[in-house]
Image (cartoon, rainbow, N blue to C red):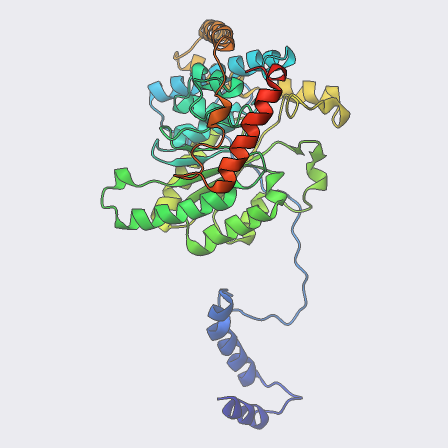
Length: 431
């Protein structure tokens, strides 16, 4: 083949001249070869002018449904949502707000060791949870407790996990706010960021295989990974999204871009068009949405789930949000952003208030209901704190349970040393 091509090349004008017929041959050859590189040039594989491509501006605009006053800007894009679901979405955001306020105060009082709130980002978590199916597997980061609340995680569950009491089904082995629930199809939260992304990509591949055999469309499911924009700088993000793209995993990647990876501003995280552009680079469908607009998030995620299920492609959704609180109870955000910035944006976007106005116009909700529910959850959380403070913690003897069916010799030795240490220092531990 090479000899024939060389012979044809020489007879068509040599190496120093390239007549028009040979150009057509080159185009045809490259068009045929494009599959080797997994590319599609659309019939034009070459150009005769050198261009370096870069697109930073304008940035891709975000989709929204509601304005700041809770009015629908385009009735054609208003999602059809059952009234019961709309009310449940509102209740979940309000419940999470009240839980966050009380437990952050409890941490300041030394009653729990650590806490992180969802303040300002409730809409992105609840809107996503509401648009997904209960069978869909969730891989959370650590600021999506509102998604768990929407699925039915109770105040008792939250407090037991944060205090590590005997009622915590995770046996008190995790830091506070590292939730998980087999019953609610929510995988364990992990402190190292981005580790959930390859897990979700692999689980989404399993879902794809299962879905291809499942004849009942109502039994098909997907996986959803919740990711902060800071986590998208980790290698696990690139490995996980690329795997999902090439293996056609049935996975949704929901990126909460709140502008700060703890204290690192977005200007130090990326130079391109946000995290949205990275999904484009991996060849998967992408959307950017106003993460403060719960209806926009709902509509986007519902459509994303449909794309995943009908095309066997993962989807990336970047939700632009603003974190109204400190990163965690260990953080003071005034060291890296001004009080004025926080005050202006926190009082401007108001995802809960915006949705409340929308529901009020539909005669489905009132401000009085918001106040009443918030007070009720506040009292419930305070009472649960008082009750669980009197409960014992999980015993030291359970520390190495559930790792293997039978403990290895090394684990038995570690358990023995742990119990001996505890006996020597028992008075130092609040057990």
